[in-house]
Image (tube, rainbow, N blue to C red; front, side, top):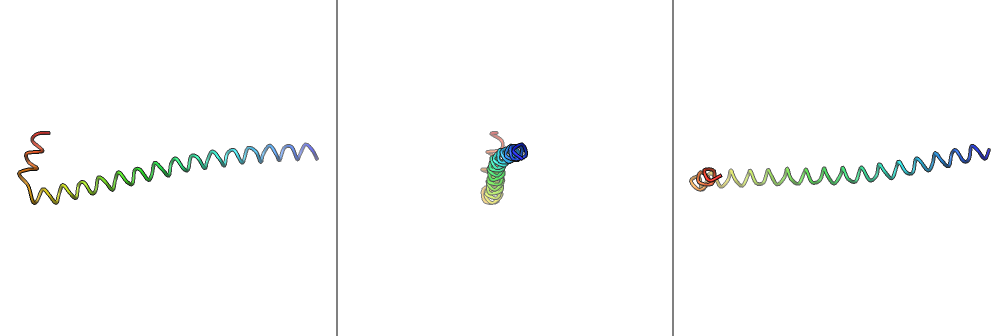
Length: 68
């Protein structure tokens, strides 16, 4: 009986450690996903801004592109 109890405590301890590890990994992946979403949103806004101003100021953007 004591052996079984010790085994179950060991299993429970391993399960708790694995759960903590997975929670940390999940938090890191969630942060990475959020950063990727924000970067994608920024790129879309930047592209929209560029397209909008290309129409209004085409010569300025031609000059910028030639300087790059």
